[in-house]
Image (cartoon, rainbow, N blue to C red; front, side):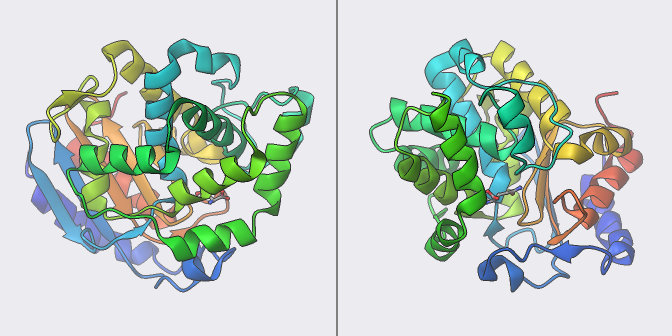
Length: 304
Ligand code: GLN
């Protein structure tokens, strides 16, 4: 498969979709990212990596960080996690409060904000230094020691924390958060602030394409069974209330973030990361979705 030629072609064709979405503007550090950035990297399980455009530039991974923290928590407490968070698509916006009250403080899934706060709470309970543990996890599996938290983004998220604080407070009132709310929010906003490139992200997600083994770090991250389950959660919950459309158009398990990144998994073959900051109404990269739709069309590879 000529992945490099395909990526070049995609970069060319997606320009046409630019100008139709809106860059995240809830914090200044995200609002000033140039809308016309575009990068894409595809890492194969055999160790090759192909990139195009701004694929080596760092951006804010935001909700993509919900995946490494889920992998960490599942590794720490296993199936017990599912007593505190569900695994059904929410059909609601990623930061919605409505469902949480009806469902007694048990979030629908770990890919919406409420669910990610529960996962972060687990990581906090099971590690001495949760912020360091998350950063180390990302660094080791991306094979890049130069990945950092963006302290400006983390501080700004904390300053504008009220929606996430409402979710955390409600869950605390229903007994579904063990740690102090401010501590959970602090770790959660730090994980969201991690700055990484498409290349780093594609490499970090390789274990999900490789039955749980990282070809970068040469170690097993998750069992084969848990890898299958994390991919199932991505397929059904990774793009919030646009997940059905994404499965229809792209056909791969994936996770998006409001920084404009999306990472998708083709089991046994590759992981692919795309970055284009303009978002559609659900908070997913508009051009990124088009790029991944083109990828599965041009390669003929999807899970369906
Ligand atoms: N930091 C953002 C928030 O918690 C992440 C949301 C996202 O990427 N969808 O609201």
